[in-house]
Amino acid sequence: MSFLSILIALLVSCSALAGETLQIATTDFPPYQNQDNEKLPGMNVEIVQEVVKLAGYEMKINFYPWARALQLAQNTETKNTLIFSVARNSEREKSLQWIGELANYKVFFWKMKDRKDIVINNMKEARRYNVGGVIDDIRTAELKKIGFVENKNLEIVTNDYVNIEKLYNKHIDLLPFDETVFINKVKTSGRDFSKVEKLINIKELNLKLYLAASPSTPKKIVDELSAAFSKFKKSKKYSEIRSKYLQP
Image 1 (cartoon, rainbow, N blue to C red):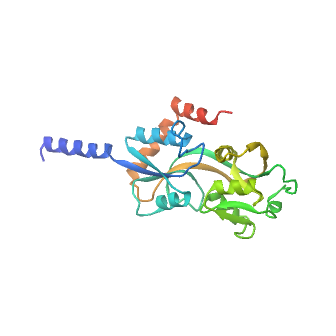
Image 2 (cartoon, rainbow, N blue to C red; image 1 turned 120 degrees about the vertical axis):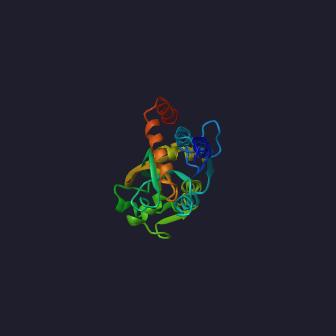
Image 3 (cartoon, rainbow, N blue to C red; image 1 turned 120 degrees about the horizontal axis):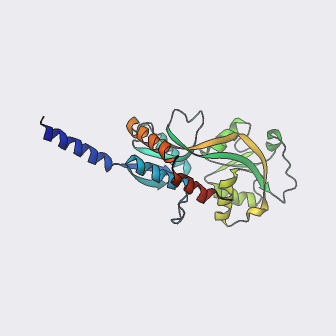
């Protein structure tokens, strides 16, 4: 093969790579990702956009119900697909390729302030009450591990907003939520956050939220994204994005 032929082949290969689009599955999860807000798309949306761009790829973000997003990302036949913000735990460890940590996730039980009948000092006492869960959500999975039982003291629905309405209408007693996420979801639902009260921390749900890739995504892409992620986290822009969303 002539030098010119080799050069043309390399240029074609690089061009194909530069034009490659990664499919990204996520769900509405403010302030980390906001499906209906173009002005503030979400902290993790902005970080992922910068990381993918830095790695030299195009991307398309697709919003799904969380169960569907996770199913797509964990499918062994789904290539070039990323997911965020996904909590990392032992059950998911081998079903995804982990790229980089996006945020800390610390979950507490919450109740309505006027529910003086609800008193909780430990997890044993919490199991006396009816808790809201979401299908295929890591909070639901962990609650089941520590003694909550579906259709007994755990009611599972399709999304967080249904549970917020149930809490405010006193159809359930408790909700497990990270405080940053809960503030935003309550505000989006049109409810008054001052009417709820934070109770005990669920230590099993003190986790990290990640950007991850499907099992069949080529290792080369994962490695390039991981390197870009590490580089971007050291940048001034990374700090600016986090400050914009996490300021008091």
